[in-house]
Length: 304
Image (cartoon, rainbow, N blue to C red; front, side):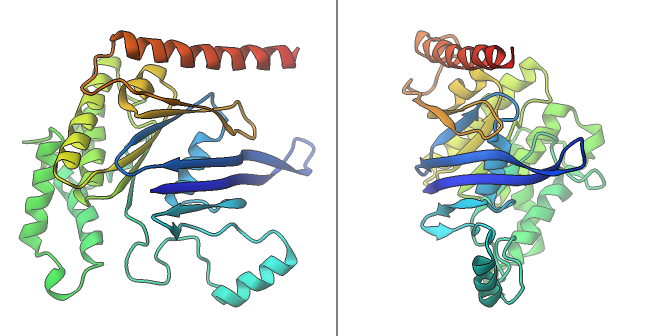
């Protein structure tokens, strides 16, 4: 279970006059996500969705609040007062806790992250990209638990096949289409068999037909993991209302930024498998679009 409690994130930025001023990216966000669910974070640009996702991943520390996964703290908020700084120094002896697993040999949390720009290594073939991830995970294991080279290669090929990349193992990312590169990113994430996958607009860079195919592939792979007794929790940032509703068990709508917070939480109770044009799905889409349109109109009025 993912638990976000009162998450806020503030930045210090330099304005056009060269003076430092504060910027609020996320303000007092609390959210609980049960295991095995798909939850989409939706909202206008600049509302803090991606910042919040990175805090979930442990890539950023919150200024305030806590993220816990299965009861374990992901990252502590950074110290904001002299007293907190002294306590921080005593506890960590000047070692930064900004990377999960800094005090141990293995990751603290079982998370994989997929970015909008694929984030695959261009100098590696498809299978080498997946093997790289598996080797990192294998390094966390000791002795007889550590898989052999052939076992890792077989596992990499298995997940490439599951992601629809059979026969593409020895191609480089530059030789793959945008949809195939995103399938490669998905295969690499799934290969380490994480409990949580965080996705930041993973299908935004592909055309509409490829996007729908990738959505279907994601649901199939998520369903296979659930049926196999290893449910995966997926938290995804999206700007696409149809995508968010079609994929998700719940859509979390953020208020306009700066200083985004949760505006609405909308359950998607339509049974799976779903049709994109089913009345239940379309009704929820229209409700969310009405919320977003209202917020846009309010912003426009405030700017006048």
